[in-house]
Image 1 (tube, rainbow, N blue to C red):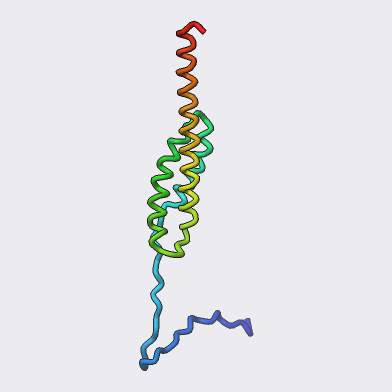
Image 2: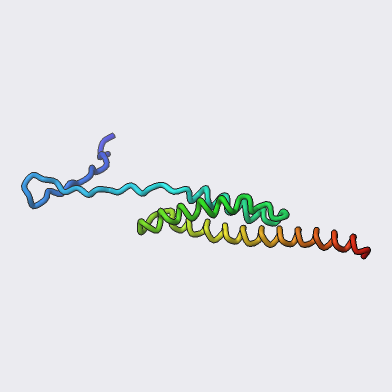
Length: 120
């Protein structure tokens, strides 16, 4: 294997203070549950069309998404910030659709109860 060179190693720049090396601390981004929130939100929106039962997933998705969004707004450029924002929006859509379906189902049940009692 002639002519194959190993990959270049990390070049360290000496600083102006003789013999000292400048180093940059690479910060570790705190982890969030943005993926979990997004999955729960999507399940909630889909489930909202089944008699509003998706609200069971949308509300926990909204809580988790708000916690993830609080973490990502504190650190500019956090990789999960877009996903956390999307999870919040989708969760609210699921809560609204699920709530409307629940109101519609309860309203129809009450309408038929009163209609049959009045002899309609």
